[in-house]
Amino acid sequence: MAGTYICRGNDGLNVCRSTLLDLSGSAISNEVVLHFTRAATLKRINLVYPEASSADAGVAIKVGKESDDDYYYTGTSEVSKAAWYETNVTMLKTDIQAGDTLVVSMAGSKVGTGTVIVTLEYRFTE
Image (tube, rainbow, N blue to C red; front, side, top):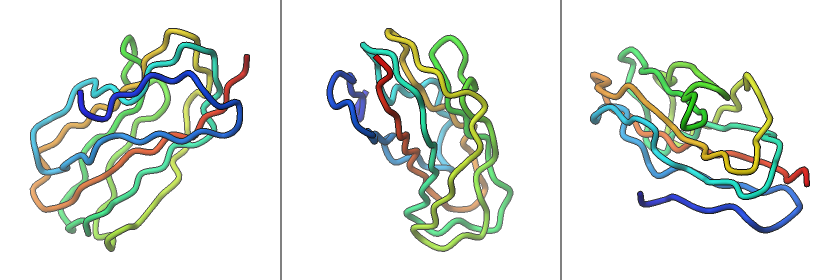
């Protein structure tokens, strides 16, 4: 669980990120990104592509909770993007309850190349 963090601290805007995910690697199911001990509001989900992505079809990426892996976002990775391309995705929900664990899942097996990092911005509500 490299890259797993427990969230306790700052009341301002906080940012956490997933580990580097290989789009052409094996599927990833419920990779833990962050566990919350306090309620929060998810403000933004960004997908950052540190490696240029090939023109081959993208693969499914989901951000959610352990109990619902596409609670916050479900979509397809970008294709034909330059290194360090970043996109802000449309979120499905924003509520985070105390005790929630946020996870990333990915289909993997992209034919071409590409990697992605999922960044989450959140603010505590209590």
